[in-house]
Each structure stands twice: as C-alpha cells, then as structure tokens.
Amino acid sequence: MFKPLSTENIHPDNHRFYRITQVAYIIGVFGHIFAGIRFYKLGIMEMVWFNCFYSVPGFAFAFFVNRKGHHNLAFAVAFTELLLHQAFGIYFIGWDSGLYFWLIYLIGLSFFNANWGKGIRFLLFSIVFVGFIILYLFFRTPESYIMSPSQYQYQYLASSTVALLLIGLLINYYVQNASKAESKLKLANQVLSEQKIQIEKTLDERNHAYARLNEELNEAAEYVKNILPEPISQPDLNVEWRFIPSASLGGDAFGYHWIDPDHFSVYLIDVSGHGVGPALLSVSVMNTLRSQSLPDTDFKCPESVLDGLNKAYPGESNNDMFFTIWYGVYNCRTRQMDFASGGHPPALLIENATEKNRTVNRLRTPNLAIGTDEDTRYSKDTLLIRENSTLILFSDGVYEIETAQGKMWRFIEFEELVLDLRRKAPHLLDQLISQVMEISGSKVFDDDFTVVEIQFK
Image 1 (spheres, rainbow, N blue to C red):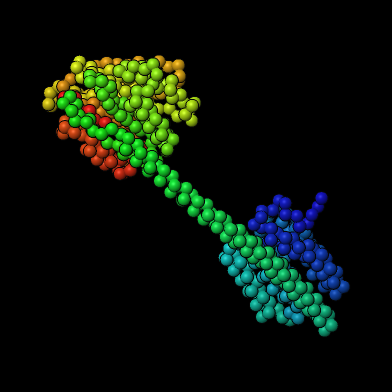
Image 2: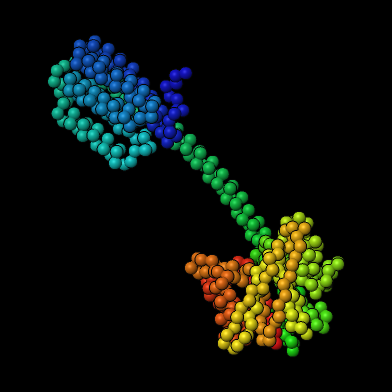
C-alpha cells in the first residue's frame, strides 16, 4: 500500500527531515499547479511554462527520490526550484507580489537535516540571503508585467499567508519533536538514575561479598599455615619450607613425619582450582597422610599410598577436583629413597659430588593425577641419597610464572636458578623467593608458592 510519509526504508537519523520535506514536496506539487492556473489567468505565460515544465515535475521528482533515501538530491532539486521560482516571479511581476516570503520559508526548511553540518547550513543561508538582497536591490520594479493594485494585494496576501503558515507548521513540528525528545530524555535520565542506584547497590553487594570472600580466604590460608609441620633440624636431616598463599588461595599443602625410627615420609599435594574448596580438600588429604588412615595401605610404599588416595578421593565425589602429589619415603639406615609422583612437577635432587660440581636429578614417575581415573595403578622409583644432598619439593606455582617481559618462565630456567643458588649458599629458600619476585616483576603470586627443602647429612 502506498504511504506518502512511510519511513520503513528510511534511516532513523533522517526520519524528521524526511517527513517534513515529504510534506513540503507534496505542497510544492499542488501549490505550483494552483500557481500555474493563477499565472495563466493573469496572462503571465513565462511563469505558466516554468510551473508546468519545471516546478511541478521537479517537486514530484524530489518526492519520489526522497522516498528512495536520496534526501540531499531531493532537497537540492526543491531548493533550486524555489530559489529560481522566486527570482523569476519577482523579475516578471515585481517585489510587491510578496514572493520573497518563500525564501524565508526555504531557510527554515534547510535546518531540519540532522546530518548537515554548520558549513552546509551556512552555505544555503548565504545563497538565500544574497539572492534576497539582489532581488530587493535590482528587481523591485517588474520588467514585463504590471498587475493592478488589487492583484498585487491578493498575490502578496496569498504568498505571505501561505509562507508564514508553513513556517508556523515548521516551528510547531520542531517544538513537538523537541518536546518529545525532552520527554524521552527525562525518561532516559530517570531510567539511568534508577539503573545507577541499582548498579551502586549491586556494586555494594559485590564489595561486601568480596570482603566476606577475602575474609574466608584469609582464614583458610591461616588455617592451612597453622597445621603445617614445624621445620626439622636433626642429625640425619634438616627440613625447611616456605608457603606463600596466593590472593585467591590455591590447593597446596605438604607434610612430613617419621613413620618409624628408620623411615621418614615427605609429601606435597596441589589440588586443582582456587578458593576454600580446594584448600579444604588439600587439608583433608594432608590429614589422611599424617594420620595414616588409608585402609589396606603400606605408608612405606609410595605406590600403595597413591593407590589408596586415588580410591579414597575420586574426582566425581569431590566436585570434579583432582590433585597432584609427590610422595617419598627415606630410609635413614640404607639411605634409600622410594618415591612416586602423580601428575606433579618433579622434585629436584641436588647431589654434592664435589663442592664446585653439583648435579641436579629430576625425581618423577609417569603417573596420573589423583582422582582422574579410579582404575589407574601407580608405580614408584628408587634411588640412593648421597651425603650432603638436597631435595627440593615444590608446586607449579613456584615456576609457572610470567616474566616482567611478558614471557612464560621455562622449567629449565627455574632448575638452573635453584642449582645456582644452592652453589652459592647452603640454604636457598629466601633467595629463591626474592629471585622469583624479581623475575616476575611482582610481589604477589597468581598461585600458591610452596617449596620444601630437605638437606640430607
């Protein structure tokens, strides 16, 4: 169905200009038909031909082109027609005909295109203004036709009345749109104010939640720290450790104790994820190992311990959490170390062959993490611990860091750093923490920083 003012295919930014110009083009078509008839009755044939062959077709062309979205082309045709029409009309019948009122209407019409900048509006205004001055100064007296006083009065009254009426309609249309825009703006401001209040309320609730979460994490971190074993200094071995929880608290935990007078066990676990849940699971596993409460398990056999843990802590029963572990048992009489790891980074054994020539061995067994597959079977490995050797246990948070240059630190670089620090000093933990912070360019770790150092005498 044909709808002269339909805006279905018009960009929203052009709706107002499109509607007002469509009305103007419709008025232009019918207005110039009546004007042509009026000029015919007055016998001014030049204006009759101008209306028939330019004005009416021009406005009709502008109307249909405007519907296709070519608003600037349509306005250019109509603008040119109005400017020439008034110029020719004043030229033929004189200034007193009142045709210059249409130039004022034309200026008002040019201000309704939202996409035009100040430059275009100033250009259009300048063209109309200069045309107005030229017509006033040089064409006040008609060159071809002189109408009677009553005809001039009628023509002046008709031109001024219709032009002023249309200007009034433009002003009314603008005021209505401005009023609607103001109402929408007030409504939008009201909605924004309500949303701001809601956002502030949500942020406040979030901040309280974060505060409560931080309190819980701090409490959990303190709890983990309090149940960790004390450092050991004995004739056979020394044990020291450093534990720095991350801001989000990971699942690191460790422990060591004498199983009997000859066997010393040490273990480090790292539960997947961050927060209170992984921390509680790590504590539970650590208590299980410390109390040796796994059924049918020989705690002097690392592979048996990992098998028992895998049965006791299946991932599907612990919110799909799994954990890696390194578990070793040292026989102080034979100096034999049995160990097994499940998905955990290798422990580093630094052997003191000579004071200047130290070597590093990676202690690791190819086993799956605990809780990933209940049917897996774990294996162990065995080696002899030489005198003055150092065993370093750690979680992945110690070496999986991003350097200050934005690159991931490689394990081999971490290994070389540990060996270098051990060559320089008998104890390396504090120096290791300092060096890692310097490499990462931060004093806050993304994951728990856990490292245990055991020196065998």
